[in-house]
Image (cartoon, rainbow, N blue to C red; front, side):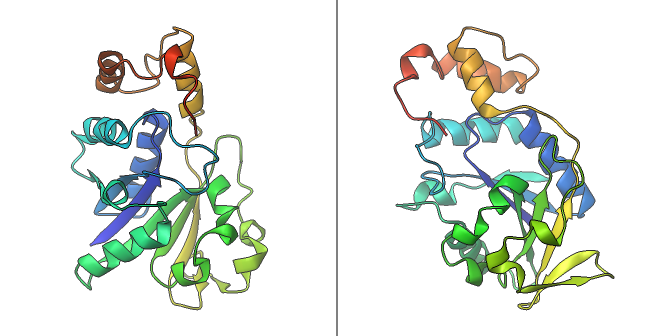
Length: 223
């Protein structure tokens, strides 16, 4: 099986997340894409606004009708920082040797990958799929790879991707621009504005029922 690993705070999950995952799943013929909510993301200056369990539940509700999607609580159950290498190792060690894994992340996160924990040990473990961000155009190439890790890759014209010396591939893929941000959704909710058509209806209902992202939460940290 070809399995995608899609991490994030998902605070809250929205149509942009869902559409991006679906396009990646289709483009790379992935059998399944696992959404992996982070408990304590190390590269966020502040913790997510809502609890890990609320964010997990929103993801579960949002993907319920897509058989190609799944959700994992591996980072919620693990104490401490939610490091990507620990998550990748978790999946690699607990699945069939015949499975291949594709770590999915946005261009902005990839640009900071040289600061990740044990970054040189990550690339031999799984393939990487770097997705465009709204407004980024087609400007994804070898120069997009951070200098600190660039020398570990060479271009493979047959795969139209960059091959790491450890044998795994780095793919760049262009997605449909959907300029929805979780921070804007939170701000709209704090201002009493509608978020209809920014998130699935059942997520909007969940947020209202649980009273999430209201003004009284402004003192709490945000991503």
